[in-house]
Amino acid sequence: MATRVEQIAPFQVMAILARAKKLALAGEDVIHLEIGEPDFVAVDAVAEAGVLAIQQGKTGYTSATGLPELKQAISEYYHSRYHASVSPERIIVTPGASGALLLMASLMVNAGEEVIMPDPCYPCNRHFLIQAGAKAKLVETKAEDGFEMDLSALSEHWQDNTSGLWLASPSNPTGAVLSKQYVSEAWQKVSELGGHLLVDEIYQGLVYDGEDFSALSISDDIFVINSFSKYFAMTGWRLGWLVVPEWAIDGATKLAQNVFIAAPSVSQYAAVRAFSPDVLAECELRRQTLNARRLVLLEQLNAIGLPVVAPAHGAFYVYVDVSSVTQDAMAWCLALLEKEKVALTPGADFGVKDAHKYVRFAYTCDEARLKEALARIARFIALSS
Ligand SMILES: Cc1ncc(COP(=O)(O)O)c(C=O)c1O
Image 1: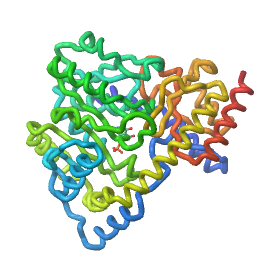
Image 2: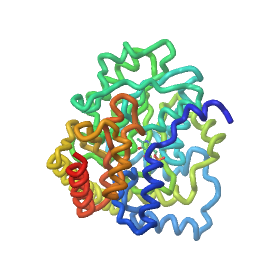
Image 3: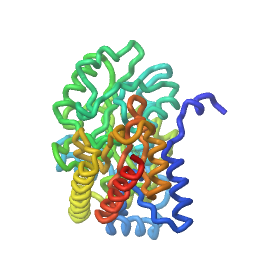
């Protein structure tokens, strides 16, 4: 096996998932707050468009960078909702944001180079870089600063072999939302340093406080990733996209042709329907449901002595410091699952510094279940102290 495989860490949450499955099989009532996907499915009209595509035999390869009508729909969505002018040619449709991240690592990062990203962040980012023979340079962030990387120190982290900066907003695992001013400043600094900036906007639309904007409204030279997985609740349809600057279209197209041939065709035909007003209205209702859960969760965490310091204004996550009750978040998660049948994700999946102090809650179950989970956690803390 290639040595790079050894550098890729398995997800710690897999141990939790495996145990949770066993407990559920044994008839236990497990509450899942560890899973990073919505508990909704694709809106009916979108699923029906997918079924129709199958019935009409629209199941062959599409063009490598995506169906023209889907790219057109995404372009119009950027224009109408985010006031960003993005030509369809700059949109590369991919198998999930994961496909977009893989393209991005191959497109912009040479072997031996580094990409700066905040600690904590989405773990696969660093693994995609390892595949490209490169690596991530994690820069510590603090809850008191809203988990934002200090941009004034960016040049100190920047080395001769630094290729760029990868950010995400809203963030997984912290739910933090970056301001437009912050992303503009990041872009200015990265440009001065001669690198590239990628903003992962996969949780776009799931913003409850603060501005829901796209980095594409700041500059045509910023790379942006997005997906149908989260806002449109289509995780298993495996569909996302990468927006590249004009000068990178040919390179990205070549890579997409070779690596994927095309994203799934049925999913693409279905996704064209996702931007219709009725579907967007349903997505907005879901956003409101998520926000109501978020407020319940924040309030209840506070009540049980686990207050969330950094604003968690987006996505469907809160990242909680549990160092007042344990020095080992992974062991704590395992014990919580065993005793109270609540599954959470330990911080070690997302970062290095202070990861042992944190757990991620995903509010991907209804309010009643969330309240029940919090009551169980309170009991667990009371009994273990
Ligand atoms: C920040 C972030 N980026 C990318 C992905 C990959 O998503 P997908 O490939 O389902 O679009 C995820 C999945 O959880 C994520 O949280």
